[in-house]
Length: 317
Image (cartoon, rainbow, N blue to C red; front, side, top):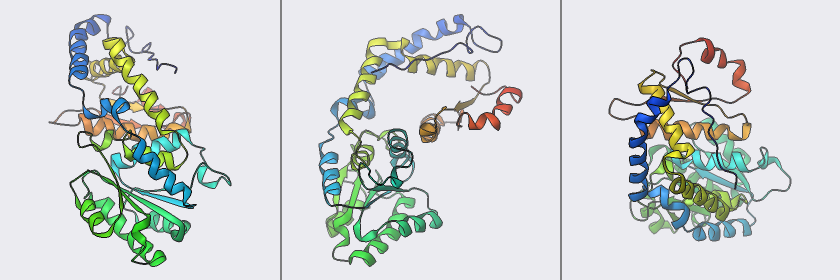
């Protein structure tokens, strides 16, 4: 697998940039941070090697074998952004319109917008659809609201006694309303490890199940992530992600550049930028601190936002 590289040419030893001396002063803290990460890894860091894709793959095969035409994924925030980023990056950009696909059409009911949700219910064949409701807490208000609408539509299409056969709950193993509903009505469930935060859960059934339904290789996703995790252990503070964190930190604290722009030059990565915005903002915006993330897409935004980046306030990286 090709390694990720990090080109810092326009950040170091240029006007408005940072110096090698500043980087050197930060090195002991970087090495300490990597050591802490490796000695006490957060739940998501262990997923590539410890996650079991089996339950997601088995249920995905059941979904695909049923001949279903549509798969509706109901979730918001980390329960949607990661899975959407996977689909957008790894599947055909017009996957749902292909006459021959790797699986059923995939619809993401993310925002609580009645127009969008109604449109999904208009195009999906609910007599032949599966619904995956994703919320780690089992009680996210927006997700539950959308589920109640979809639930009523499924009942109308399949009947109250059969609709639960086509519903999957992806949630905490024990907590939350979804577990109570599944116990009462018999929905299938997939579990999110308690140690993994929602925004970091793409390598749990949150991301692996819909990926497998759409014909993506869940095992390959875990293998690739495991290689990335191994690189952190091998390279330590020299890893591109660690170096990138250092540059961003110094540009913020020492140069006042507190806006982070992720601007991929590929349409397939546009939702990766949206996911990055959530990961950055939710993780770092605490205790009156934090920089502002912003998503853009090249070359489209060269013809709108780059004017601001180049000639507006010098507060962006």
